[in-house]
Length: 340
Ligand SMILES: [Zn+2]
Image (cartoon, rainbow, N blue to C red; front, side):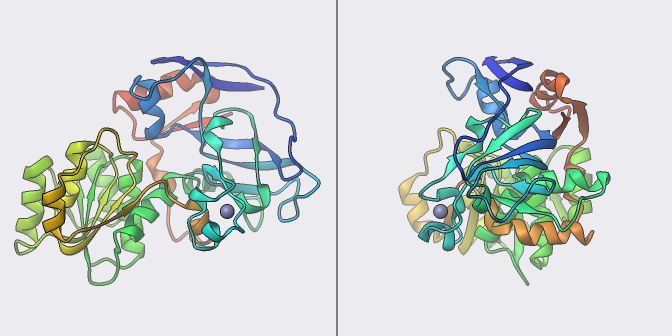
């Protein structure tokens, strides 16, 4: 099969990779209907996450089940499925508490690499959720987004306790930040402030439910949020970037007693202890337990209540993955969908 491999920073190639086979009786093989490039794929692409040798890329996926192992009971060949970027058994104590991305048996799908024609998905029963029927073509990008960016934005909004009567601020205008705006609206937030300096992203944020836009960033951005909230700060802030500046922007935009949901993968972030101590801000986040939200998200998409696939503003054949990475790296594209 064809699949994407990162050879060195900036060096993405689509090449022949071995066809995946059932290894464990709990595995499924899926044929990808669509896959995509994640903001977090840009960290190794830019050489910020060290890599040792060629690595298959991609952890977002949806597609049609080709084959299942002998122990798989909940999905069968021919079904259209969506799964999370961590395979999980969905039965252990951590999974049952809703933290499937910390499952005691979790396996990172990124190590398998779903920017490819086929993928082996471990723990298929606990990981994959089938749609009611074969989806129409135009719904595939929406379902693909549920595999990571929608589920991650949703977790960010939930971790920030976005909800009825709340003012929610979102730091980061990538796909996850934009979908955190959508999630905050679905969860009933009263005001949703998107922090973005890029006009097309501001428009999409408004389409997804943002009521205000703040263009300042860093401490100026936090100051602006305070001005908009009677000097108090937002009740709920979603951090969807992962840098020192964005994390402090999130914490400093939050009122005492408020919540930060952080879902950008943190790189080199240090939180000053004493400032944090006196802030009275709750911090909760980490790798989103997307599997917890998948059934609900698939329902919302299936009923056409949300259209999260709008974050894909570039669609390319899998063979042109390198251009997809470049476009996202240069911020010419919010998110690239790849068609195997
Ligand atoms: Zn588990």
